[in-house]
Length: 490
Image (tube, rainbow, N blue to C red; front, top):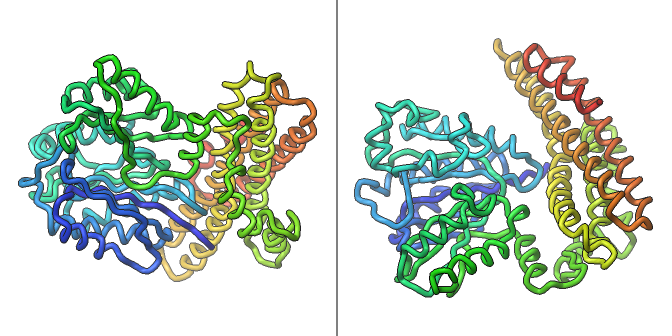
């Protein structure tokens, strides 16, 4: 079963090519692919983008952290970018067949292993954070390596999530987490005055009153003032909006953007959104892009033989006399189709003269439905995989005196996947209901089908939750899940 997870480790070395090559070489494993490498001498930092199976990606990251600890000495490191470790931050991002919860599990396992092997203390951030104040990376890294080194043993808020309260003498500490795709986006201003970049960054970042899902700082890079940003949810705050905001703020100081850069990789949809923003193409849709249409045809989603060619393999897998894919995967597929239909109706109405007054609501619905559709599609495989994990746990329990613990954890995972499907399908249903009032009534039948599919997804997913709860021996967990399912059923 296909699973793909992205890992984007950041290492505190951007000047020595040989060291970066050695770190990358350490991470080469079967089932892991190198997508990109970025080195910046001013920041003295490199960003490596890997993608791999859930079984291999964690081990690759661990080996990269170990090699970085061998080669990088933070006591001698100088660079513009904040850092607290030789391997500074190691995020895991769900791509295909996995959920953000799966990435949290991998992050926690990787963190434990980093301490065991290298005695580098570990902090967890974003979705893997163990405390609310550690969701944001900037809160953990405040004061950088030097401040953490001095305070880790004396200040409770500096205590690591894994390991003793002491930094590795030369490799510092590492932050490991799970998050959605992030865009590292920098804008160069036509001035060397870094104070202006800092003022613009303060205006644009969310923590000081700027745009939601934007983090920013000002640096001097290659003799120019740079506004360095991380966009943590490009669908909610598009790249184009961020660029325009930076441009407006820079104008207050008599400067303007000179150029911008992407560090690492950027999702294709982010560029499609930017094209729609700047070109103002009426009724723009990703399917209008030649390469997207060709990809759909080549993958069988719009095969010459008809639409049936795209759905038939999945339907035949459901019909096969095997336990997976089963009802949980079918429920997730129904939810994904519901989100797709609702997305279609909203996209067809957006931009039309009769519905211009609803443009904001339609835009928000389209963005959210696109995310829900991708998450529900991923859950098709995730549900089947969670069942396979349960079967493996039961098999392993026969040979282990502590096997029941493994079964409990596996059942919890198999419960959380359909619960997430039910929650997402419920959100699709709510959005679909709102769209009935602000979209073309000629598409009403499509929304009726979307609503029916969403309800089928909710009903089917909750049935799978109930079945898994019957075998669980954790009363607190069962009670918490039953409260959630009761609310969804209501």
